[in-house]
Image (tube, rainbow, N blue to C red; front, side, top):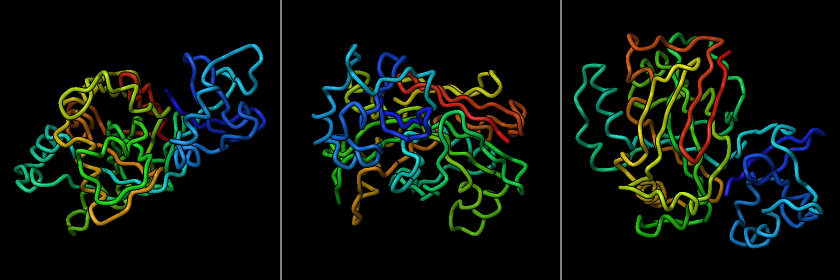
Length: 305
């Protein structure tokens, strides 16, 4: 099941479900107001609302609230998530990116899944413009997957964590590498190198849809990134070192997680220019089109300005 946030021709923003890749159901309109207008509100009570919504997950001649996909504008599925934590869970990316800078692997990385908080108020969606930070010359993309928390919980054990996941989406953790490099020398983590934009979308796929693809600590789904149509990055989510369940366990230790919070996987191996090197591709410039494609999760594209 694929959940979206979209803008109708009258300017209203609504939560919907994508059907057969051709139609979108406005859940609020189709249910005559029984279901909420915003996807965040739906996720907060998704166990209750999902049962009611099942009646509207089809197209019939008499059903209202049905729109053709090409007649609406998709937004980020969660334009205003409750929070955004980004992890560092693919070993290949960590090793290679550090090696490119002449650094050894961090032994502590194998002890705990680590994360940082980014700007959850700077979320972009499919097709949106990404403003290049004025002080940066090393703009980069990061090919990631994110999970959306769907149930409140605290001190969640990894063995139980899957029941707290609502679904998954593509995530691009845009990075101003020159700003990031300078500020991280101080030892407090990325800030201005990361806080200007994060893209998610085009939709959220419920965890049940991906279950048949489970492999290792992730799912057997390919991940690709293209810049101006040229394939640069290619990996697979099944290669992840820390599962989302382990990330949730770490994030919820002594802290309550709430529905609508986002956890990013970190970059898949080969999933950014920093890791590939400038001999493979220059840093991003205005006019570049960056396209992230993940099997079953769709395609997320953005233009640099």
